[in-house]
Image 1 (tube, rainbow, N blue to C red):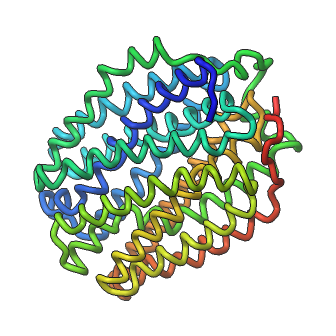
Image 2 (cartoon, rainbow, N blue to C red; image 1 turned 90 degrees about the vertical axis):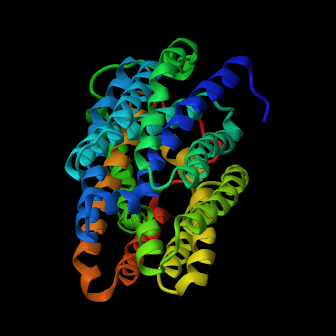
Length: 390
């Protein structure tokens, strides 16, 4: 992929932000069994914790509107500083309630940085390579998560140390502020009025509603599955931290290749067909992971990682191309809010169903919601290589 100097700087410094985000955002899931043990938390309390965390995406929305109003660079640097401070503080949390509150704030900044960085990279990428540019960003986020995965077996069960290490982002945030270029497309846009008001205009509100509904239904399954799969592995399948970490590492390598494959796939074949196919495949493989014993859990997780990772650049490019520059970051955050609502719904459903039918079966049942969300994608327009709306 040929890039000019500003595009390379944008990808490098936005990439650093998402590496830090990937590290910080993965620690809770990886260490959740140890956290549950330390605080003597049953599954119901863990689903409530996940629900609180998901609501953090609500705070990303007002921050994203500032990115549409005042630019991408400053909000990305602010977000990195914000989630780094709260990650360090999470390592000192005296109770599960304190940890939940701190993670709520961290998720707010993490969701904002993810959306604004995606908007920035799509705006700067060559028209025919937007999917590949987002796939590189996704790969770097996976790299950050991989660092925590490789580190934790050496530290387990000392989960606090990983959170404390997340504070390093506070030292790097000033460099991101000074070195990350501002979006040339945003600088050339005529920014007037409220981004939210713009998205509610007839030209855009149908797209917002469809993306929100699809994202919410997708999160009904992936929210609980992503948060609780280590708990399922340790408490239901009785796996130790080492094989769980090995599985995560293998899935991460498969996922890394899949990010790049997804970027290539969407730039070659468009957005709609790959998005629908990968959504269906993700739903089926995730369901399989929680209903087929240890062997199926291993195989299903690898497939789930592959399909979900390949879908990330597809959706990243597509959602950014569907909305105008004056409200692109806000639209990304709107999707995150919808995902938070879906995740809360899924987590609460698991909390209610798991005591009677089992944790794995409760999560698998939610796959029906994600399959329903896939069919909404037929209504959205294809945007491959289309000019970005102003």
